[in-house]
Image (cartoon, each protein chain N blue to C red):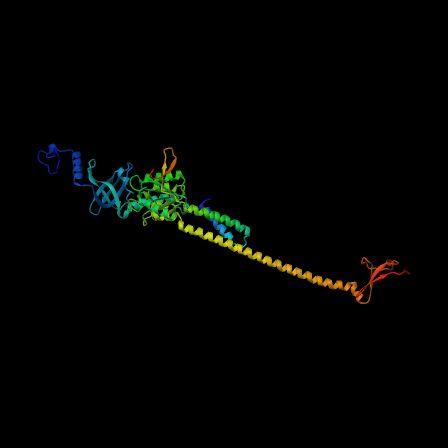
Length: 70
Length: 389
């Protein structure tokens, strides 16, 4: 799931959890789902893309993304 | 021998009628002399009678109140001039003075042409803008929204330029998880337009970036010209993913700025625009986590309260039910008592009971010799039937 979708799903979960009519079972299930998304989203934020890559097009029209020092 | 102006001695050609020179020699000589006397030079004047010939050369007259001179721009030199001058426009022309021998006319061979206040660049800019506008490429409805959370950002710029350096610095700080891919291109000089177009087309064919930043650091108006080029603008308009222009020159808007989906005033600003700050997102996630926990706790508290309420309601109901039963029992006891034969006994009656406790209520029940008990209000007396009548 993309970060954007994760964030959107989290917003929905928080909104529904905070509503007054929610069933307890549903609340527990949502919470569990929310924690999963929260963990995944935090993980993707803290992932670090190393150095800047460079786009190279080969003679046959294929592409390659290389590190500048290669 | 040479034909210097001071060389009109008797021996020189043209010194007398018999040695008269040809017209062509005269004008050619005049040309050589003029070209030798004037180094290339800037001349200011007003343009009149401009004509762009089919052969690609431009012809016009450069004049002021006192004088005028024929001027020509050869076809190959017109390419470095942004636009044709308007009638009456005051220009500065750089070139060499010469003579056109075939016509015997003095002419100024122009290599560079500039109008006051960047007039020619402005004219070209307006012409380009008008053409792009006519094709709908500047329409506001064409502007695409940038993806909120791009994962791959392509940057079309010089690999060694300040622009790239700035973009990398901002992106690494704000969004280290976003991949940056440089698509190198010269951003100034003769090859800039070609390279920029090729790079934009390449990133489009690759089609793996979520958006493209195209830009360069600040520079002189001349340095930024590639970003005002119509071909670059059209390539940018055709780019399949959203585009951000980032030409480091805050005052002037370039043609690329107008065609791009988003204009950033500098490369750093472009990087700030395309990615959200990681710290801000972290804190947003944190807040959502807190809200989730709080909401769940609240819901659990409510469930607990509901349970307690239900338990106490149940207890109340049980107590009330027990009380109702006790009252009923008391009432039944009273009614039972009223019906009890014991009450009759109290009034002085007696009842005969067989050994098994059965009440003997009919004469038929008393066989002769039957042993039975006579129950009175204060006890029993054993009895026997002596005889039957």
